[in-house]
Amino acid sequence: MANNVELNEIMITRAIIDRYMEKLHQNLEVDVAIVGAGPAGLVAGTYLSRAGYKVSIYERKLSVGGGMWGGGMLFNDIVVQEEAKRILEDFGVRGRHFTETYFTADSIEAVSMLAARAIQSGVTIFNCVSVEDVVMRPERVIGLVINWTAVEMAGLHVDPLAIRAKYVVDATGHDTEVVKVVHRKVPGRLMTPSGNIEGEKSMWSDRAEKLTLENTREVFPGLFVAGMAANATFGGPRMGPIFGGMLLSGEKVAIHIIERLKGEQ
Image 1 (cartoon, rainbow, N blue to C red):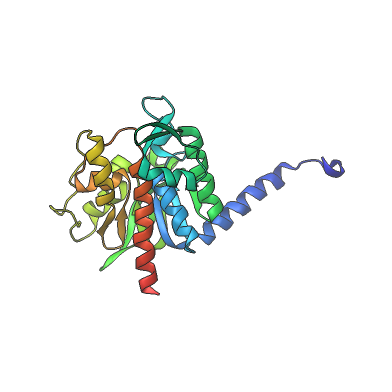
Image 2 (cartoon, rainbow, N blue to C red; image 1 turned 120 degrees about the vertical axis):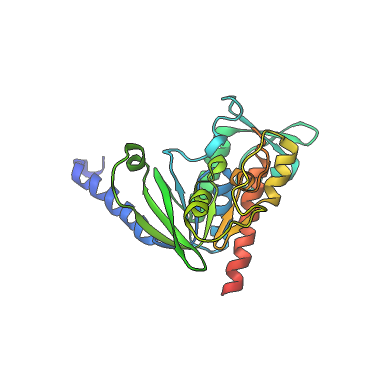
């Protein structure tokens, strides 16, 4: 160690507290708050941040990556179709041609690179943080109500904190956590055929991949859905361990929100 300086436990603790508080203060008001750090959320956050917008991602679990880590049934390889291969390449993930329009990638490399590129682009990721509610005004959703996941799991009566965002993205996958809160608590109807959450249907990979993109859109003023949350909200089927639609959905929601933010400047 330089100069034989003895490491001080309090200084280590202070460094962690000070740096985390700095991140928290800097992200109390953001352009876009994304809930869920799976592939769709990480891709969306990266493209939004590259466009110059302030983005924070809230992940309820300790690890990011959603269902991508486990590939299919813990076989840690993923499949993407040809249209999505360019996004893997953009994030530095090595894809291998399998057959026809199918490409594979190591799921561990894929998650690691997606997360690293998101952070390096300027995205701030808060893990172990759950979203328990939204902040609303008469016309739209304007933010999130957050708490520690450990508090939620323990069932402790601890009041949450709030952050403000111009737009919110629900990228929580099958659970549609933010959409469920809005549907249950916020006055008004969802922008779905029934005005309710249509619900996820059984596996149909080809149909699901196409509908993931179609369903990536605004579902309530100020709230967009991406990834599997889009299909679960609008009634599409699940697709299984193919992730091209997730990546393309992240890109699409970023494009939509960038257009909206530019129009408001």
